[in-house]
Image (cartoon, rainbow, N blue to C red; front, side, top):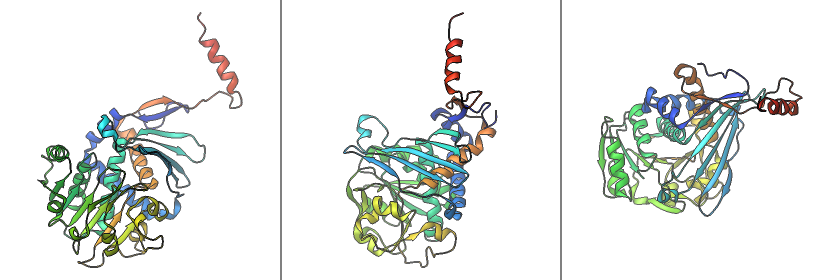
Length: 354
């Protein structure tokens, strides 16, 4: 089976079950590394993309967002939610699905789950940023917040950047136990820590990935030292941060898309004219990344639509090889494009008992 549907009305659909099979056949770390490569390639052609902030619907319970983009040939969007209280209800904090479509016809070419895929692409984006911003020879990483994203981050940094030790902390010890158990045979040296301060001690890279929708101080200023790189990925909506403001004032800050990050990221704590560097310019060699051993670098990551575009295109490219998709009858396709009504009437006749 190839990735092109047998009829124009049929759209390849990657279910949760097939996404898990696909990721397991490729390998989790390998899939993240592949997606990272696609993200990096697309960041090199950043000016080609339509770019806009997320389209959000906020509530007291959380947020539902649409994330659209296009490179002029292919269009994508992702539907994603963020509801921190869901975990207590037995639900995922973040769920998502997405779509790819041809720009020339408007017809979709892929519909996919993206709860798993978002976890992969978030880790992939983190490792792309760290490739340019983390200290050379980094071998130890602290992960504060050991929920759904933790293992993906650890595996990505082990696979792509050679991280050897991960130091884990979560306010819920069962989350740390879960992460340590899942990483037991990963090749990483996994250290469970009793506090955030303990976790960041001696770490070259610090990743914060907590879920609470509030202004929080996961890292205080005294916890961050010269030469460290911070991936702040938990603060991703208005009113939600993880870092003390003083850390930002000591750091060189790198972002995906400033109009979105200034609303949603750690830099919502700073004046709107505070200088930041767009990561795509670093990747293209137009701006410097890490410039000294003592520099503190901060990737203020909120997730951007082009990263989902890269991930969806990667999945689409693997379908014909792995044949892990179904076909959904999503698009009405009458024999005469002008006769949609006639299509309905013919279906009525066909549905009559003989």
